[in-house]
Image 1 (cartoon, rainbow, N blue to C red):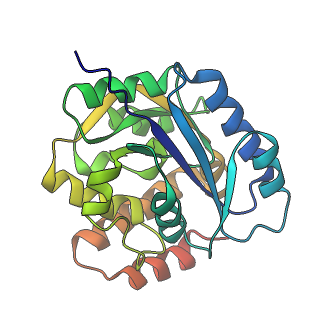
Image 2 (tube, helix red, strand yellow; image 1 turned 180 degrees about the vertical axis):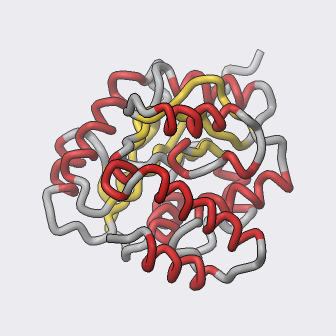
Length: 234
């Protein structure tokens, strides 16, 4: 019987998230069910607050990068040494024993996948969209659900497309759906509803839907970014 046990490298891109980085690192520590998390790589895009020092204080390795989530995640993946890469947004908290769930998915033959998602909100509107993350269809995916993938598969497919300033998760996941069976783990990360509360739930969801549609219709990465800057960024 083989004693081989794969390890996980967790990669978290950040920019001025001094408070949330503490929360997510505490959550990782609390919810890990094994000692096979090899490293936590916090890739900082030039924070001007205490994000880097807080990350170090809570046990992570900080890597400096230019700003841009696709770039930052690729920088982290380039030096990650775990057999599994786990990309996690700073405001998404992993569920209990998330690492064991990933190992089980890998044991079942899944090289790539994500968790379901819930919001830290009582909004029925957001609960509906969270429920949709149970559906194994590309349109129901997003970076807030986190992403696990074997290091080998990630690099064989050239990582995230750095032309995408936004939508980089969706573009990459779309490629993976065409290559491999995509696993939805039946447990949920808890993600912050802060963007919806700041911008308006219905309006923000409408703009996200428009970005999906524009991408489907062939919009270029810069066109998606310009739409984001006009209607979503504040």
